[in-house]
Picture 1 (cartoon, rainbow, N blue to C red):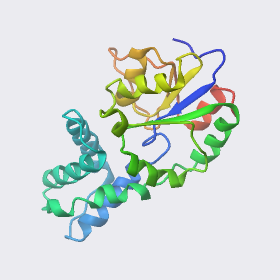
Picture 2 (cartoon, one colour):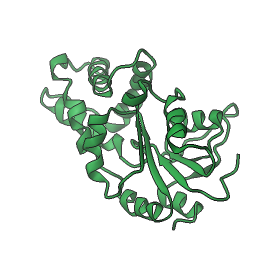
Picture 3 (cartoon, rainbow, N blue to C red):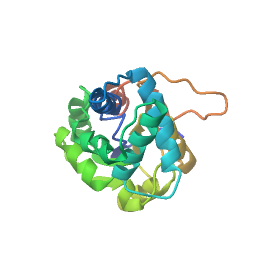
Length: 226
């Protein structure tokens, strides 16, 4: 599944691709845990966060703000930190402070000059609205979990994006998560550029993306936008 000869539309995953959720979530957890005299490392939090999120998102749909509250409670229990559920709102309340990667706005500006742009994200509309304050670029398309009432890797996000774009022709998706984005794009035959920021390796059973890069700059160069 090669990249289109003429790319017209580029969609992006948000958290992990444009936004540094790992730093943002860690800072939120660390600040809240310190109130109770607990400390935690980023290295122990991130894997727990990914595992817990995958479990919760696999159940029946609920707003991402609620997913985050449940995530906070479950992780705190696993860490032996007695967080009261009534305080779990600290995590969804922190989303608007999760920072953009340093390269994000520069590269989005480059993409914007050549293509129509979209966001395809496992988030609710309110929280994404808070995150979008980090972006200097407007987007032609936004598909959220709230709108399709499901979470990637379920294909609903991509089916809805295709419906709004009107075609798969000329469309490329750019994302950092193999599980949530690359795999469903491969299944749907949507060209996908994997921004492998964490230098993950694939096992023999995992199919390769259309292209693999380390940064958004490399993705922009690949599509002739930089």
